[in-house]
Length: 370
Image (cartoon, rainbow, N blue to C red; front, side):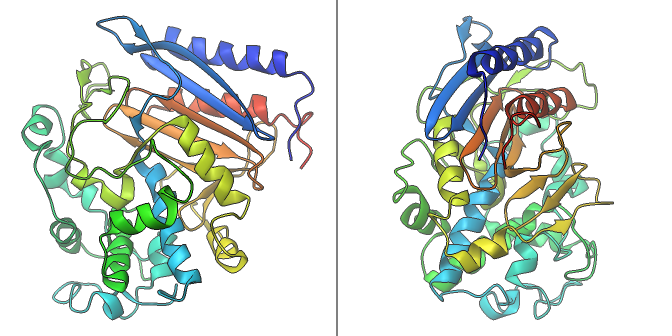
């Protein structure tokens, strides 16, 4: 549990960080919502729409990027708890023949390894040809194209394994595609329907969805401003709000709000979604050292722990980026104190640093009680 001795002072400090992120040019707009002991506080700075001057506001919808992996892991672990799947199930068991004629052995890659990102399966998102198709003007030509999960997995299979199964952490969206494909085979339902049945409807997450081919964000939202992964960091911003999310799907294709994200992670970490055995699996972590991923982190099953804020306090959650959007949701392991933040532009070290500063304010060592 975390306690804040002077909420007013804390709120003022958080607001200064938000204002600073906008004034520095790190983002057009930024929001933060804090959940603490069932109370909420929302703050914002900057613009949702530069052209109209519309400000950021509560309850806005936005694409959450890889924060969706926590939903995928929770859905999968829910099925594990029901006996529909096992974390020791192999890709070959549920997707027989999919990895044939590749450098991968489907009998050795387990569901657990997919979820903790140690399977070694290459990331289709980083395939040079695929990546180039999402840069600059090429993105406009691709953004409404529909891909099947099998198509994207086969792009990954062109490349050799990053490591032997279970040997090391390597971040790869392909792993979460394979996990969701196993969910579909085991249940006979689409992944989106299983997600809705097991997670979204029971938690009444009415502002959260997995749109796949729907290109419009279905409600009030900020413009998602992106440089479209241009090599020039000063490249102009483009409106990347409308896009087809089949290239993100179970690895990062969801839409949500700060409020719904707090509700989900509070339910998850307080033990209201998973049985104790599956929750223990979720928070069993592997080292991310040497992977080129975020420093000072360890990765579980769809969640990760930031081990060392300046205050020395570990915080748990997930985050993600997509074109013109970056989200981070982190907090106490028991789910009683959580912070959700969003910027309506691409991931940047400056935006990440701003969120870490807010977490340090919220979980300062002098105020944190466990």
